[in-house]
Length: 254
Image (cartoon, rainbow, N blue to C red; front, top):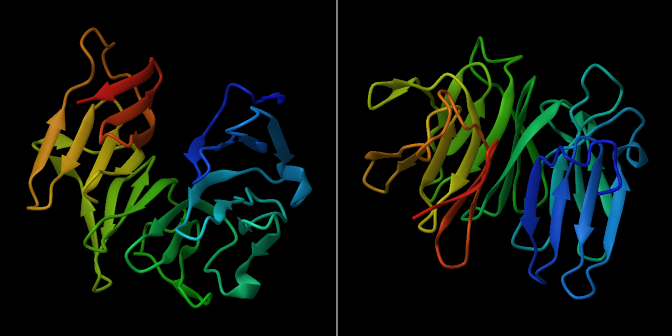
């Protein structure tokens, strides 16, 4: 990618055509599935001094990502429609905050879920945004990833407080340990082939919460350094295989 941050790819998704979309700190890029052409949009094109974090694709083919304001005037959420039109949403449109760090798609409810420093924002299927508060002590937390499971639970990973769940009834739960292991830093969440939760805590391998509510742990690859490798993203292939983007390269989990 023609960028000073070309080695810092933060998110990757594939659309219905097979084209691949990726974000870095400063750019959004699309690799065409047929001709292999690379198209790049710089974050500054949306607002000066902005950068991109989070990237999801909804059932309508719309691409969504956040613009954390990081103490600058920039911020909010940007949507790229299939027809090539762009739209930016801010607190003026109903967001809880313009400092958006993590976005997820609720496939069952056709909603967009976004969290950042200042609150939780949910976009309903009718296009309206709802702003919601987050528990005391979490405002200002370092949110890294978000995911919605098959049961409608909204999960959030944090760099400083681990894993959080917001249930369908609006209650919050702090998941601090799994099988006796503390969850202090969670950088990647994923949705399994059956819609269940996948969690990659820093240095802790891969955790899976099955439909029955039981946790299972896949240990880090043999020979991995102590405390690592860290996982930056989780993806599920068409064959149901789980792939991890780690500091030591790509890892396939059976």
